Length: 268
Image 1 (cartoon, rainbow, N blue to C red):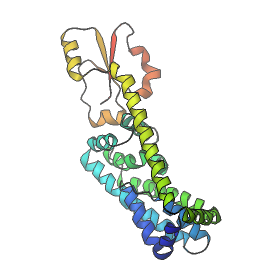
Image 2 (image 1 turned 90 degrees about the horizontal axis):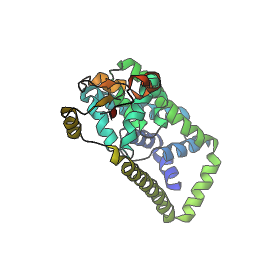
Image 3 (image 1 turned 30 degrees about the vertical axis):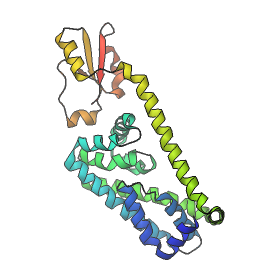
Image 4 (image 1 turned 90 degrees about the vertical axis):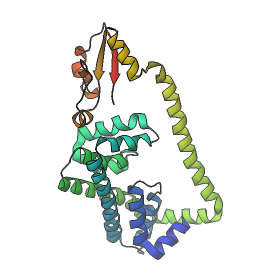
């Protein structure tokens, strides 16, 4: 923490701008510790809150706009690629698209506070052809809220941050070891949980080829397309005879699913 505060004291706004842009563009370089430290320095009068928020907001908006145009030109496959490299790819698509479907442009106001959704929301806005002016307004405000929240925390706890910096300097290199260990433990925990989840559901999966054989063989079954509305509108092709029924509609339309037949669900 002491090294962070020393760096910010010397280069301040440029460091915050660069790190916020780097994190929001997708590189695994956390900007939050620097925003907290910058807020602490602002609380002691060594940095300007207005300039910090302006730099953070602009950096965030530039990165989000890049992702917006990638989503707009690349289509839905961009979101699929982002979710495949996520630690939770099985829930990434459904969670982010469901949230975007419910809240629309307003989801950009809080997207950066939700892990995973912060990276996916801007390209998803491009995929859905959200008007550019609307995207810039909501994404810009979301970036300001996100940066402002951590700068404010640093401001209010500026004295505690200085104490933390002193303790960190006493620990020396052990501080870095503890931070790296905590990150590694988090990633390992997510990986183990994912592997357990896949083992539980693997027995219930069939391949498209197996489904084709069953349909050609006259097996009495019902195929239910549970893709989200955004997915369906982006690629409206559907398996012949399938029922399109999103998860959000299940409570209202469950009577359309016959109980006496085998049910096959697909979402991609």
